[in-house]
Image (cartoon, rainbow over all chains, first blue to last red; front, side):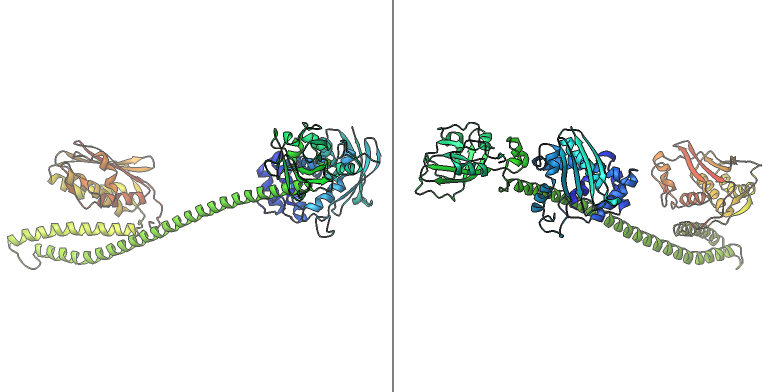
Length: 190
Length: 424
């Protein structure tokens, strides 16, 4: 994953718990990186180790932590100067969620290792699609080669809703880790 | 047909409709640069655009000759880059080209020059209004990535500099510590060599000195027959000076043993009162010979103590000897009593006293007592050795003195002294 992900996790911990806690998380995860370079690609295992260690030290379940991180990620990327890119995706949650794949495709044409242009060689971004669109409700389908990140999707949708200044109610309908084909979510906003 | 988000102005014909859709910043003029039509985003950037108004009133035109107010279709090359800079809002800049359609219609086809997506947003233009064929939003994204990468590189450079400074400081400290270690080792080696030398020389001197004193004493005692009176007084002076020299040699030997860390106490139980009485007996005669009053207050309850009797005797003789030596008139008083878990020995005299600035100095090696008038006496070793012996017993030694009134040396020794390791 890009260093930006790890940097965002670090920022979230620093903002809420301070530098000593982050150092403890790094030590527990066995990650001896003084500074994550945002455009550098780091092994996925490093991010998973950090999330696992953070979950233990912050005494928060991994799903809850990922959900918080999803929400924080939208704020983080907005502050990092990517806000207009998010805005480009649409004016309401239906438009934005429907355009997520398009946004990932565009990122793949720009980020050297994102992989949308060279399948199998890059970051292998997730795929999103929307069905059952009715007014301000829809079903969001999430496909990813990475396991266990569905709770982060919930946080991401909540973060996007916050950016679009609307309230959202999101519930997971299907669970890949329980044998379903993929994860899906019921999204209602107002 | 889905309405186009890009072209909402008033194109002149179907061709222009397509151009307006693909180039929302389009401005249509004639060869004299009189404005006729423009795209929607051009009007967002420059609301001053009006039909029949000169383009040059709204924008500075860069890329043509300064005095050109008309573009000649016969000579114009559309490959020349053109920059339009808003006259009032100079941050609003468009870059593109001027393209003739026939001889009379001139199209400006261009895009804003921005380096951050936020710059575009601040102009009132959203990224999604830029048609996908144009890579402006991608360029802004790439620029943003580059900016973040540069910021990270800068941060990494700062961190590398900090680490470098820390390493430099650490190296400096290690170099300093190594210097100190070397200097200490050199000093210790020099000190050891000096102690060994002094010890060796002292031994070598003491042996013949004892022989000289022994034989001279035998001569005085008449062992080798009667000697003339004149020779007797010479022999006596030889003995006095010989004993003085032997005393000095013994002190130097003591110092070298102490400095070499080899002085150990021979700890044993002994009767402290009896020791005091022996010391008094040995020194009292010297005081009375000088006409001094010799006062002793030895507590009969002093009892037994543990310690090195010989060394304690040495300390007391040194202190009492000094008191007698430096006192011309008056008295020398020796007090010994118990004080909590210690025995306390006080030797007072009515001598010249010791100046405050000298009172700490006199316990150091080779620091002689300075008498009034600047005269110095002794080798400056006796008090130093005495204080070290007292310290080895776990005791203390100090002095109170007033110039012209006298001095009191006070020694405390613990009643029970544990077996000692060699001094280090």
